[in-house]
Amino acid sequence: MAQRWGITIPLPERPLAEQRELIAALPDLGYTDVWSAEGGAADAFTPLALAATWAPELRLGTAIVPVYTRGPATLAMSAATLAAAAPGRFALGVGTSSDVIVGKWNGIPFEEPYKRVRDTVRFLRAAWTGQKVTERYDTFEVRGFTAGLVPDQPPPILIAALRPGMLRLAGREGDGAIINWLSAEDVRTVVPHVQQGGTGKEIAARIFVMPDVEPDTARGIARRMITAYLNVPVYRAFHEWLGRERLEPMWAAWERGERKEALAAIPDEVVDELVVHGPAGYCRERVQQYVDNGVTTPVLALSASGDPGEAIRALGLR
Image 1 (cartoon, one colour):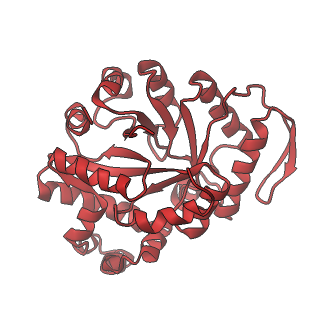
Image 2: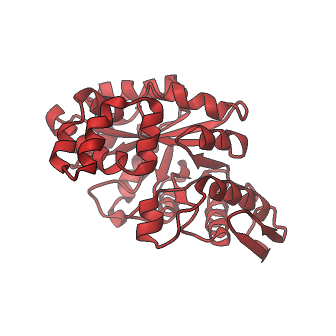
């Protein structure tokens, strides 16, 4: 398989409507994939639909669509539509998201996340056959849904996973896993759980990157990102499982409401493990370490302010 080299869209610091030129240039710079996210900004599907027409050579992926915030049938229809528009070029990444996004922002109970992901994947597989689906799953019930649009090539389904149970589910019932917020060295801990489900599973990793940013500036940005993400219960549990005890002082300060102290408590070495920064050549080498340790699809996420075009060109493989 040729080396995959992905990037997260929409790109930062530029309106979506003005990103056509940058995205169209990605294949010539060595990028093979664009992957979207869905949290509190753009939805997951619209940027990919635009990219499908702006750069038809690119593979498209969602990383991720939450399984709670769209009904099962709506999710099946959205994914089938993009798969039909870009045959063979779309991968659907699904996951639980977090209790903040699901519960606090969308008012949906964040209950039984493992089962909800498992049930959604099983429903999607059934729906994309074109047969009528009437099924009571553990976390929802579908009565009489028949997909009116069935893609000739159903998209592979990747499951966002952090700890062993979901990682094994990704390998057993998914076509691979999407991993996030981990170091290149952590990949060696994570990937074997996915591979228990069989060989040839895709491992897509979102990797936060800040090329050619002065170290103190990069670490300041990274610290704010780390406190925003890794105090969310699911991510804290992930890093506790990985054995990152060096974050204990940060977690303790955050629980006390001491935000500045929490930022200061994150050691430089933890920042440097979790967020790639430095000269662009070093950043490419660091991302390659993720690949060497088991990632099949690195997905760069530009994390600093400034012209995204410069960062894209600096990080390209050609």
